[in-house]
Image 1: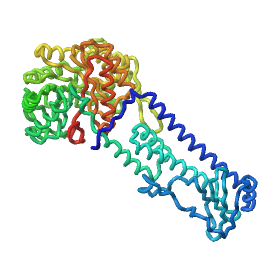
Image 2 (image 1 turned 90 degrees about the vertical axis):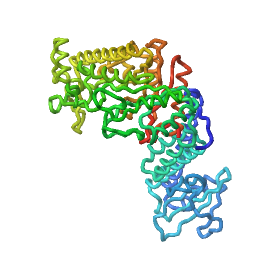
Image 3 (image 1 turned 180 degrees about the horizontal axis):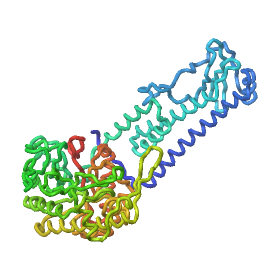
Image 4 (image 1 turned 135 degrees about the horizontal axis):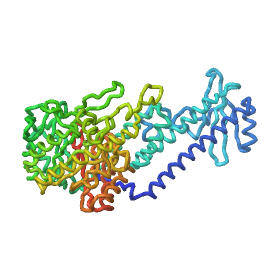
Length: 563
């Protein structure tokens, strides 16, 4: 890592960015203007002159000071085929450089004939050499278009180079995107891609701005408990105040390297289901406390291992429109009253440990076709008096010639979604109250995403939740994430900003909001991560009771904030 560079936030510099965009537009406009002028000039000469002599006469009438050399006079001729080598990107690229504005070379179709060379002195004093092919051997229009495109490509390429050298991230990305969109098959693309990847590693992480933050640990790069302790020491030195730890292990997913697993999946604490991978959570907690770190346990709602081994059927079922029936999906059925008891038992055993808090995962939501187990459908009919008719709720509609279908929903589905949302909200109330009753000292958080909060009806339709149902829950904090549980897709920046404002306005001022910065392939780039940190710091300055979270740390993807 090089020396620390200061990058100003987009939020702080609207005028600065506007000026940058104007400069970019002016540069591109001038390039296109010069290109068009050149093309018109050359094509006009070609179309109006049928021979070199007529072309010579044309220049004589338009440029009185013109001096015409004889074809065999080569003493002042320079090589017109010499390309600019210059500095920077061109040295390492084999692609054709931009057209030299000092010379114009028309394509030569007859290699046997001897071309004529004319020297033209323009009003500015610059001397231009025009290579005139033999009679009736002029370049075609598509050749001129090709030269024009090459000049535009080179001009934009040089602008990208300039932004790269200046370390101007915004301009570099804009110009890079323009180049790739305009010239997708350019031989320079792979070279620019490499520069784009290299660009991001030239700035040190502003870790000092993460003081007091909560760090989510999924798969830390520690091969032993001693290494984990050293890792905790580095977190303490950098001002991290708490860690959020996964307590569930699934088959086929990475494990803690410092664990001694007895089972392929289960929990990292003792439990009555006899699903113990390794009783590590108590030791992790003790070690974290010795480094002044609080420990919050991540508690999933629907994602639990070995649900099929339970004595009572607890798995959810989804509607399959093509098979016209429901099929098992391996998530916990939150609409089954037995699932409530299952979660309560796990929480009871988790609360026996010396953890400082519990963060409920955002996986309590349902997709439209989920939540149709036999238990759930019987409950719905008993409590509402209405049976569930899938053919009335879901109407498949072909979306195009590819054979794909989109499921439309009607009023009957809205009734089911409303009932389902209320049942899930009630379950959350019960679980939170259970924790508060048994451990009043415990911190309780709930993960949410912008999509769950922004609209009054769509969140209920797509997620079986919404701001109206979440804002009054008795949690100490909401953890607002950029992406949903087990998803790599991040929310739009405008949506996230709007969700922060709405959440802060609609919940109690005493409740904290953790804004979680995602560690991902995007924020693996230090400049991008610093920009996320700056954006979240702006929210901290604007609103009260805002804290920062970041994660998850994942050694398998090389995602971390400390070395």
